[in-house]
Image 1: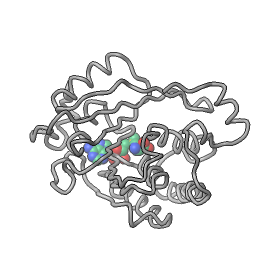
Image 2: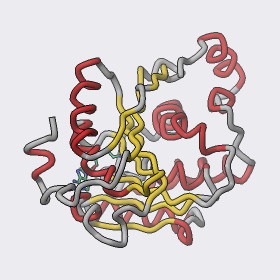
Image 3: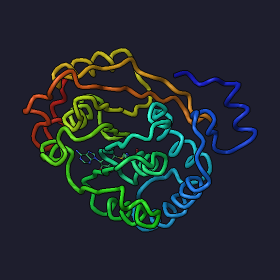
Image 4: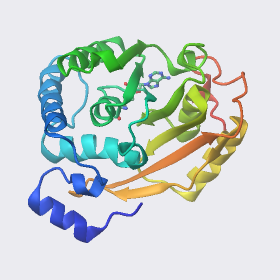
Length: 249
Ligand code: SAM
């Protein structure tokens, strides 16, 4: 989806959070939760290094907007949704998704315990705890755990590893009709070629990349969706560390 520059200008003149570009309007309670999340990030950032994107447009555009723009298909739905965010770090995009999609059960995975403890405390403060589960482990383990393998409608990852590596983390987690969303920055044809090769090995299909120019000069983003074409071979994900060292390209 391309961003309409006229719409951006109008949004930025009237509001610091250009929801209309998302085609979705948060309730007052959701806006309050996003504000509270920003407050909690400031608090926890002083104890654990979670993110540098906490103030002004760094937060509203590079964190919240960037987490939510690829989800337009899911905003209008009230169907129950199982979501997993792999490599959530300070809680993005997972916590933003948990706030924006009240129908979602959200699992957040990261291998760094101190980050997940902070994210857990934030989820609790935000009242999200009944819908948010945390797993402190490597994604290669998550994909082999029967409690997670093949269980998710939506699997997402932002800024975690190269796209073929992330594909190996996410595809095994999907239900047969699920979708993996790879949040990327710049994206070239060679990236598509590499990801397509990885997707074929994982028995998944890659959709055409979608682009977005973030408002407030926050740069270019892409999202690439993968959907299963059949069961993911049991050999994936490979052992901890192998996807990163020997990417499926
Ligand atoms: N997704 C967040 C964001 O966009 O702000 C955090 C990005 S941070 C650069 C990458 C995170 O992925 C780190 O917190 C790291 O611990 C986690 N990570 C990387 N590889 C992982 C793996 N194989 N299993 C679990 N977590 C992983």
